Length: 300
Image 1: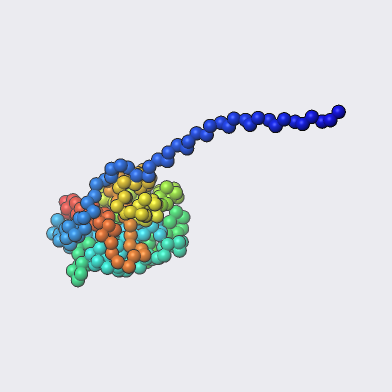
Image 2: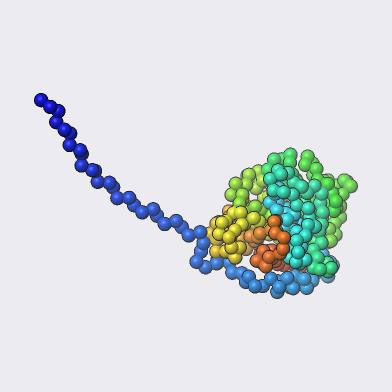
């Protein structure tokens, strides 16, 4: 008796595949913060003609602090670039990824428009690091804001400056003090910032807030944090990712959203760019107005 041939099994019906859910749009239909991209020249002129309200203040001193490689020195250079309308390097910036702060001394930089010196001095300071034994110390930053540290002081990672030291100012006057503290943060890494670094920022924030010192956050490298913005800088206030980064920053550090400004520093450009300039100028405008308010209140 021969073997019977086996009949092929009928094909089984395949379950219908569900279409993949649509990806959420990376941008809002309307910008969540309005900005006039054609206002560069108007903003630039206003800030060039600005005069401090307090007659005893010749220069508004602004201290720039932040984590290493966040772009502190590059932000100072970018502000100067806007007014010089060319790429400058008044504050020597380090290459990203070097792993240490290039700034070792407290140094003030005057901003110029052509040959005219504007009434702003940006003071650069050693970068903050999470480890207690590395980077600038919160006490040094607090002392610098209050005007107790002379220009040229070389930071020590093991101990802060103290009364009686060579570069310590016991009785600072208005010109020694900073009227605004600017925190520079990296947009792409803010969500992963070490809690120890956040704790340092909070110590600084609480101490200087008790004295009424305004604080502004400049969020740099927004083009690295969002492909939409990398393609078109004018999409910054359409970007859901940038708004999310700013909200995270506000929640972590405690600075309100209205005092957080996303910018792109000049990094690899050979010429200035109107859109980069507008973002820099809008940040500077808020910094200067906040600082100017402090010059008035500090005289009472």
